[in-house]
Amino acid sequence: MRVSNQSKTNTFLFLSFAVLFGLAFLRVHMRVQTTLIGYELGKLKQQESSLLEEKSQLQMTYAKITGKEYLSVLSRQPESEIKDRNPLVLSEL
Image (tube, rainbow, N blue to C red):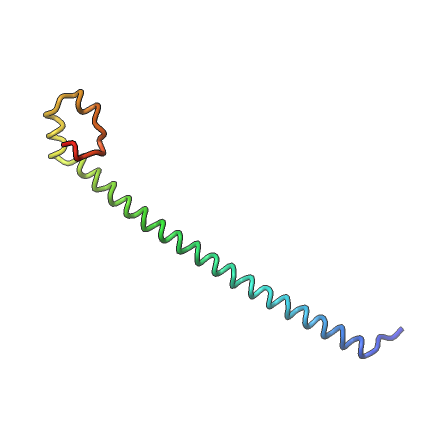
């Protein structure tokens, strides 16, 4: 049984188009994934920025709480007032 030249040509064209379609699909998939990763990276950078700002604020609060002036004011107050006070609320002093 012989396969005609027309059938071989059709098979070759079909396989060529199938490979090209697969490669095109792969390229589109990679571009979409790259875009999604870029969006995620942007969100993570924004989160990093807000966390660094929060860290800075917490360091400032820590410095105020452990500062000599704050501690000397605390040492002059009755113990009952100190226990009731939130240590992060510095405006009470």
